[in-house]
Image (cartoon, rainbow, N blue to C red; front, side, top):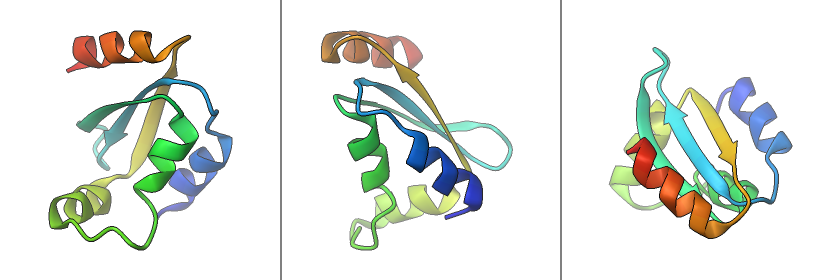
Length: 83
């Protein structure tokens, strides 16, 4: 995990929203939604991830962008639009 990611994880709110994982070139490699951005996004960076697909994804994450919304329903709709 790079310093940029560490810093962004510290600043994440406990609000619902969507998150975009980006690679070192700025390409979006994953879009997700969360009812609690801090908990969900931080969960990618724990040492106990065993799923090989998730491990491969996390290894490519260079930056994270988040979009805060007012409700979980809004997060779901926004995620669909972003995908």
